[in-house]
Image (tube, rainbow, N blue to C red; front, side):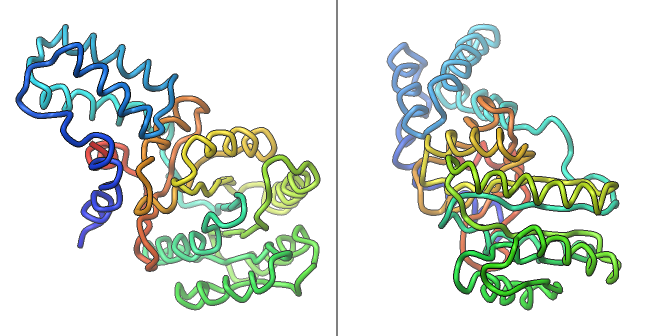
Length: 296
């Protein structure tokens, strides 16, 4: 099964529970607009983003003399994709890069790291994993399993170690092994815990000092099932850690796939990867056009 089919299957709950029955060859009426607006809010696209999209759709329908609901859907797909489209290409150069993976507990950070290592190993990169989640019991062991699956080396310390020290040692190994992609796991933390957020800043300072030329991407893993709470998480992590992107997981278990539009429109943070399953190849680089079509 191709990834688009997996994505389409993963977003089936949003499509079937929220947008089902809205489109077809019927004429566009005011009732259609009202039902569509309600559906978009239910899909967690958010009030602000929904309002903007509805304004664009009404204008587009008028300007292009669109008559049927299916024609309006095609317009809406293009508007959805434009909202989610990143402002810059992701990891466009072959230079050294660091992914700092952050998020609250239980969103799938460690699993996402393993899948990222696999993606980039297949593309010819040389990833190295840093097990900087030193608080959760067996976190390093879990990451080691994923490292083995992807063929990536891993640097880990004993439980309770200083996470910044793990990253420091990982960078030394990264240089010695001539790797070009460092992926750092971090402990799950609530976005309102100041001391844990300060720890992320300490890790970032180590990376900036030891790998000043490397491109650093701070990626927040968000569980799509949390809906609008994901926006609050992204806003807080963005303020504390300077997010550059989102990894959206568990899309196969939610009717709230519209959060991908909300985080980009409201916070300016693009989704960079999406996950739709548990196996190592069930994560893919985000394609806004593909996602928009799979959503509705």
